[in-house]
Length: 143
Length: 144
Image 1 (cartoon, rainbow over the protein chains, first blue to last red):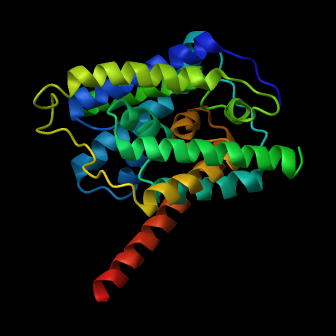
Image 2 (image 1 turned 180 degrees about the vertical axis):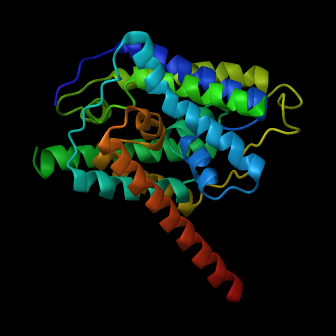
Image 3 (image 1 turned 90 degrees about the vertical axis):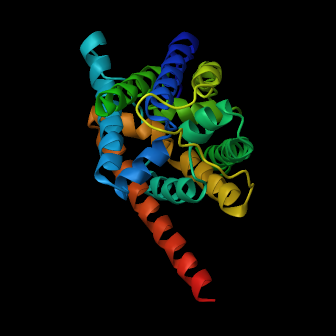
């Protein structure tokens, strides 16, 4: 499935992700990592711990709705993945980010931004295995 | 106030993810498909996010404490251990199969698309399974 190269849109989206990460660190002293926020929400340490995590998640979910209100269109989501593979992939992502303590936002943005060696190692690792997996799925197994 | 800034941070993040293309599996997978239908857009997402955060963190982490808390909650470990590398490798395999990562999928829940819901249920199951495994190995280690 072909997609259109969108450097400016992607760059401005990236800048906003950065702004959000700075804001959460400046106010609550927390890493804007989707894994960490979700994982803590599933087993919160206290009511106030649950509160801020739920508020961040609610904000995230409002994102596409805000985009629709402004532009009149929901963000484009094209899913070339069969349903079974979505479930298998999702389960593996859940296992991986829990043991790996983070994902693209936590390690790839926040962790690398504070020059964490763990985050550099994690990001290099998952970028490599994602690339290899996409190659195998699309060019070895078929596609 | 804590809840309001949390919500606003999440909202800005969610808008950023939405317009960047990170919530779109076709775009994410094409970024990695250098040998096929390559779409380099995502380098601009990560590059933009990383540069802005890098500069912003310099100022923020220079302060003694965040506005509404007593300390910054930063991971203390520096160890490059097996769970970090192995877990990240498994995350990448799952990401390459599904096309969604957690940061892309959570905001995308707002679109109400069934694919996102299926992925997120599987993601949450995986998180619980891994937490169960971690508890199990912790109990084993304690009883040895």
